Amino acid sequence: MKILQFGKFYYPTFGGMERTMFEITEGFNARGIKCDVLCSNTKAQSEISQFDGYTAYRAATYGLINSAPISPKLISRLWKIHKNYDIIHIHHPDPMAFLALYLVRPSSKIVIQWQSDIVRQAKMLKFFLPLQDWVLKRADRIIVASEAYAKHSPHLRQYLEKTEIIPLGISDASFYVDEAKVEQIKEKYSDKKIVLTFGRLVTYKGFEYLVEAARHLSDDYVVLIGGGGVEEKKLSELIRKYKLENKVHLLGHVDESEKYNYYQAASLFCLPSVTKAEAYGIVLLEAMAFGLPIVSSRIEESGMTWVNQDKVTGILVPPRSPEALAGAIMQIGKDPEIYRKFSENCLERYRSVFTRETMIDSLNNLYQKIL
Image (tube, rainbow, N blue to C red; front, side, top):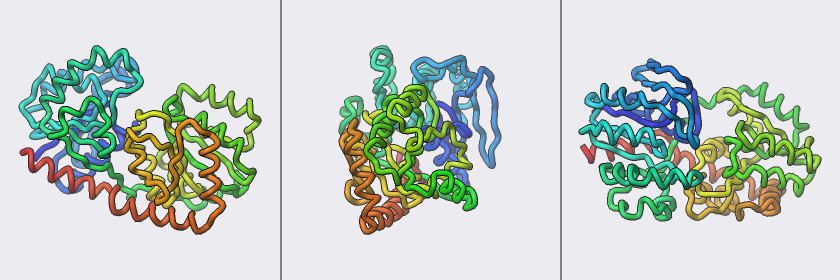
C-alpha cells in the first residue's frame, strides 16, 4: 500500500492542516508503510524535500487568494506521480488540490480529510461549490474528526453514508521541554498564573475577547498569546486602550522548539474562537498532553466542543463573552480540586483518544477496507 497526502503546505510550516498531514505521514512511515506528500511551497519555486523514508513534493506558489495558495504546478506534479499511489488522501479546504484532482482524474482510491467547511470566504464558495460537489461524489471516503462537525456541515449531509469519524491525533514524542527555559518564563511573568493560547491572529480565533477578559482577571493572572497575523495591530491597540500592558502579552511567532516550554510553564489553556471555522483545535490536544485544563467557546457546530468536554477537561463558555471567559478561568484557577480533576482528565482523554497511534490505527483500517 502506497499513500499520498495532498494538502496546502507541509512541515516546517505548521497550522492545523499541516500538523495533521505531518502526523499521518510520519505515523505511516514509522510503520514501514510508504506515505509521501504533495503540497504547495511557501515560495515561487518548486522543490522536492527528502525526509527519513519519504518525499515531499512542493509546487511553486504565486500568491494567495483568500488564504488559498495559487500553485498551478500541483496539477502537473500530480499527473507525473499519481500512478505510484494506491490512495490519495486530500486535506480540505484546499481549492488547488480539488482542481488538480478534477483535471488529472487518478484511478487511485480517494479519501477526503474534511478539516473544515469554507466559512469565511462565502463569495468564493459560490464559484467553488460545483468543483467541491464533484470531488465529494468522486471520493471513496470522507473523514471528519468529530461527529458534531459531520452532522452540522451542510455540505456533507448527502454524503453521510461514506463519512467516517476519525479523531485527529498527535505524538508527544517531540515535546522537548527545557526546564531552565520554563523557569525563565515563569520568572519573567513574576510567577503569575499563565493563561496560554496559540493560533493565527485572525478574526475567528476571538483573541480580542480574551484580551478584554483580562480586564476582569485578578492581578495574579497573565495572558500570553502566541502567533502572528493580520489582527496583531488591532490586539495591540486593544491592550493599550485598556492599559493591559502588564497583563496581556503578544508573543509573536513561537518556534515549535520553544512552544512546549510555554505549555509546561502555563497554568491553563484558553481557545476563545467565535465560529465553526475553528473546526477542531489541534492546540487543544497539545494542551491536554501537558495536563492543562481548558477554557474554550461552546460552538455546537464545531468539533472543538467535543474535544474539550464541559466540566470534564475544562469549561465551555458562550462565544464573544469576555466576562464568561474570565469567570471560567478564575473558577479553575482558584479551586485546587477542580484544577486537579480537569488536569487528570485532560491527560487521560489525550492518551485514550487523541494520540497519533490511535489515529493511524483507524486510518490504516479504513485504507485497507476501501482497497
